[in-house]
Length: 310
Image (cartoon, rainbow, N blue to C red; front, side, top):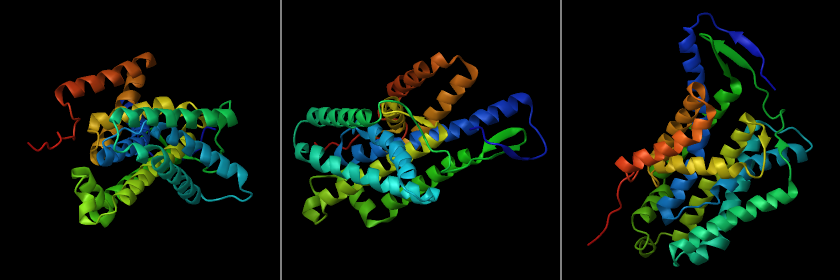
């Protein structure tokens, strides 16, 4: 459904300026979603030094959870309530996966955890595929979008919602990590996981909280993505999940602010490539960007080499 233009502010930019500004707004929208998903990858890696490859499928479940909540409940819930419910459901599912699949392998070889994460993602995807073998449409009545023009640039309220909600969640996460006891415990585990239990910090509880927060952010991203691109499918988490993983690596895997930077950078590159070049170049240039950055910055833009005691 194309939103109606309800306001048109006077004044316009040159044609090339309008086009560039329009694509910049689109880049902010896509980059916000990539950044939210990338944060989940970075949080888990920072605490456990593992890649949760099931995270992309948790993102996909966020969109389906939103669709089911809106369709199943007999009353109309506000957007904020649905968002919090989706984050709670996907966050608890992330904790369940960590408790059942990852915790028993914590002391084992890292390749076992990687294979288990891939297996969890395939299980989630195929269970969803059994229930929804065809693409589904997100409900359009959850948020009715309108739009306005400013200096010739059309901006929808849905775009502002996605950018604003993503920014609020990112600021809240930064506050959680930098200003709270739980965040201090997360940073302590990331720095020296072996010493933390000796200091009386409940490591398992903090790790579960990390999975909860990371999965909840992924679920929120799935819901926002489903509203922006309202056709959802069980396979949507594969490509978007890999793109968000690329964003986390570009920014510096394990770095929270690096994940945000990488998400916005990748979103800008993808949108601008499609705007000025054939769309077939999008993935080529995205992956080439990853390779170029890793050649000159092996730990990402904001990443740092691990401290090794000798």
